[in-house]
Length: 208
Image 1 (tube, one colour):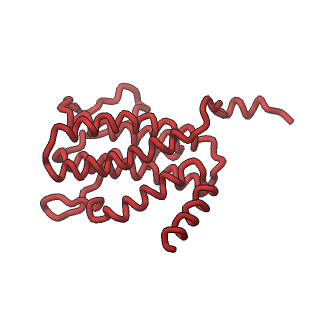
Image 2 (spheres, rainbow, N blue to C red; image 1 turned 60 degrees about the vertical axis):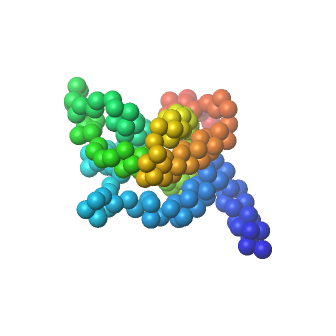
Image 3 (cartoon, helix red, strand yellow; image 1 turned 90 degrees about the horizontal axis):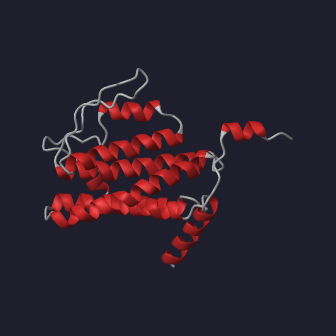
């Protein structure tokens, strides 16, 4: 009986938000079941932020959904680079309007992998929030497509990292990050193929 009711509720949700809701429901279940793991702490007992202060500021500064998703993708890539041993010097601004990414994130591999899982969860939450407010927003498809493309690459990297470690904390973080990336990729796979993007220019050209 409970399973039947759950399926009915999920069906209603998917009909309301067909693009990302099915993936979001699963992510919410995963987040609830792994709430303790999601609230990762450092050795000092303090909660670890999955974004650096400068990264969080960039997220706040980019109010447009597609630009904000690009920030999330960039900060995930920074962590993969560190885990893979790629030197991460402090980025220098070439132009005045270039974003200031600040110091590279620090932490153990397990902490950085946990960051990735939480960043992916925050990214899909941002898309979901826009869907709730305006499901016809033209940036939803564009943003989800970008995130899904990146998520497919993340799954490959996570699979390789899983084969290289036996550390329990790292494996748990990899599993969580992989689950989030997979759900994002599956949601992106449901988008219409070859969908034309609507731009402000296109809207101006359309006259009644």
